[in-house]
Image (cartoon, rainbow, N blue to C red):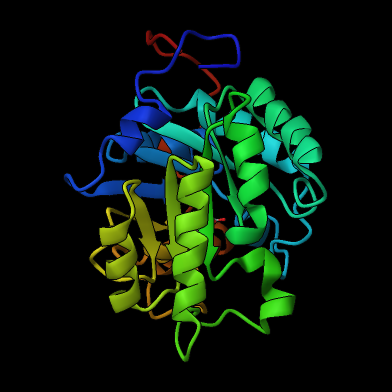
Length: 277
Ligand code: KIV
């Protein structure tokens, strides 16, 4: 699937229509092989700006560029045949004005083939979300903990406790009224996310926001256990691939050093004895 391919099977209105039904399954994807794995089981493959931290070793998502999102977005779209791709708008690509947001969202969609973008922000981004949705850009909103604002929030904290609940609810209502087709709730206490989910007509997709959301999203490398030194409370590890990979690489290194690898079966004979190469 590319920017010039036919219309996708699953589009934002289908996702919106999943409100209150079987929970939406969302994982991040950053590459074609990763997207193929996600495609088999998920409704949405999110090309998150977490790519900066997960694949590029950045300390936060703030250094992620449009070029990175386009490169990874194209790669993911190639690996999907049924799940819907959504691409994150990187920090600095949409906050300045609705016009700036439109220019960059249109680039993300036309240069990758993804039918929707995600951006962070509630009440203060509502005007931009309305501008985009009225011009053919479906928007998934992202409220609660918004990692691109880590410096103003003062860290990756739970958002919505201690008197903050009303403002998170206002954000949710504002992005819905602006036309978002769904909203990610990140690190929102579960009672509040249940109330938001009940109040909104669009699906809520939780990450660290409890079981009552209309769907769940995780960073795929986190749930596969690819990082051995990073385990936030809201991540359940469904595999320990980091440990498995470490064991496999250690065994390879030992076998290279002891000359156990490559064996004859991994090598080519000098003379063919009646066998095809
Ligand atoms: O960038 C990302 O991966 C995200 C999800 C964690 C929601 O925004």
